[in-house]
Length: 412
Image (cartoon, rainbow, N blue to C red; front, side):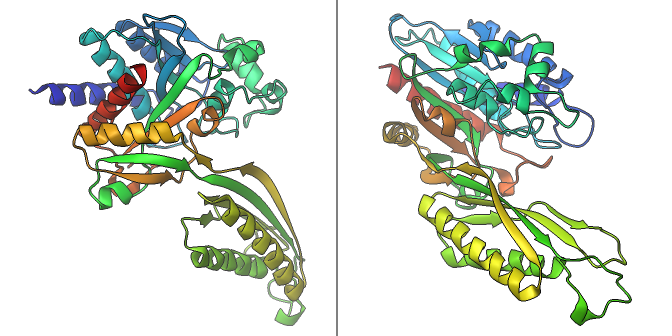
């Protein structure tokens, strides 16, 4: 077995082991502060210690393994990702980046590398927001962007708050401010992640050099008509809320296709009330997830949607409201780290291309306090957030080599 094969095998073994820590059901369901989280946490801490790292947890449970440097005055170079999951997701999203960070730590240890900067290997909590409906909570804590009040206002489906759950988990959420990092103590953060899209595989590219992370806008559209009997109400007397709602969805799709600049829109949730098969729909609520690498495209799209919703509602004899409840601007990653990833991939003779991330990541918040770089590896058929999610383990090994090369370049 070659060294490369051994490293890929080690990555595979660890990812498969972590995938066992899941609630019942297909795929991987590992929500924050659950027994599954606790089991993964123990495994990661043990792996960090085995790689000769000192280990600590911050107020929300982000796990930081640290390898001290020869110059204690220098800020840390950090690498990592998240280890929570969506419900019934795959075993690679987030976890692959954590495992590859650990593999990097092992390689450094085995080769006796002497680092000037402290090196940190971080496993981040609650990126997906699957439990508390607040994505990238752990990353926001690292960036100092979580308000103390959120610890009480963010609750799960059982009404348990982040503060209650974290405290029961043995953490000290009241020490939230101490979790915040800055450029003074973190020189850079590098995140390896599966692409979660089809481009790298389709183009047979080994490494994605992430240049930006899309901005996200989330809208809630409420359409109000009147519910009536489905059999006795003539068509011309109806105030059916679903018909104009369907037209609104179609128009949004048309708008986005006209923009054609990487902007996407998704209606992921739609409810119809009263919901009976023999009742005219009186109310329809649906969400719109809008994403784009271009802030101006998002602003123009929202303006156009707001006008369109009003016009369709007026023409249909119903009322409609548009509420924007989530707003996150696109993030451009640090040019120095983008260049470093390109140079590392070229030096290793891996095919690579620039790419924008269509998914949100902890890196987009950490970028507010330090330089950030991201490395993508291919996703089979672009599938993610599903049990069928897959990335070849040798591709993860290649991504780890790129990350290691970037870390060493920064350390020099």
